[in-house]
Structure formats: C-alpha cells, structure tokens
Image (cartoon, rainbow, N blue to C red; front, side):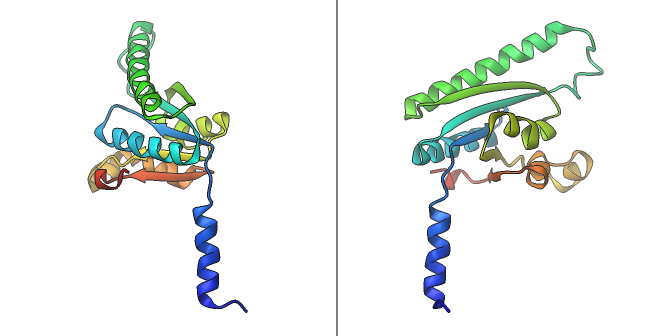
Length: 165
C-alpha cells in the first residue's frame, strides 16, 4: 500500500498534467463573458490550445418579434461577428495562435452544452457566471448550471476577476 503523501502526489500530478487542446469560450458581450475570455486566453496559452470563440443568438426571444424578418437576424449576426472579431484580435495580440469563431442561432443552453462542443471537438467549455438571483434562476434557469448538468467535457465557470490570471 502506498503512503498517503505518495498517493496525494500521484493525484496532484494527474491533475496538473491535464492538457486541453480545444477550448470553447461562450461570449455574449457581458462583463462575465469577458472574464471567461481573459481566463480562457491564459489557459490556451499554457496549453498551446485552440480557442473557439462562440456566440449563440437566442432565437427563443425573437420568435414573437419577427418570425419572418430576416433583417433582424442579419443585424444580430453582424453584431456578433463584430464582437467575436474584437475578441479574436485580442487573443492573437496576447499570443494565441489558433482562434476560431462560431456563431449559432437557437437555444444557448443546448447549443453550448452539447451541440457546439460535439461538432467542434471541444475538451473544455468556459463560461462567465451570470449573477442571476435565486428567483431569476427559478424562472429561467442558469445557462452555466444547464451546461454543467449536460456537458460531456470539463466546464469552468468564471466568477472572479481577481482569479482571472
């Protein structure tokens, strides 16, 4: 039987040797997603990983506004492209070599938890904590909570700007 300190060292080494190759960061323009981006860049640099910058346009909110108005969808897609291009530029400036942009239309929870990670062969999902209060979580649910319950890969929920680096 191994001594306790040897077992601890084996576990520590296994955790520290975790290597990520394709990191998906959910970006929605919020302060919290910017924190996830900052931490994601650092993780990508340490792992020499590819960043997959992802934005999901929530079509559930648009169904009652304009079912057949493609102009609204095109405008939202253009805005998302602008946001992702800004993040991609920052990632390259910081030294990340491989960056990919993904924009999807649909339910953010299911797309971020399963569909996009499967399609892009992601091994780490990074999201910002939304800061919903208890009542809001009860009514609409937290995206990060949904992703945690349904994702097949590791998930990092970024909460604190002091721990971003």
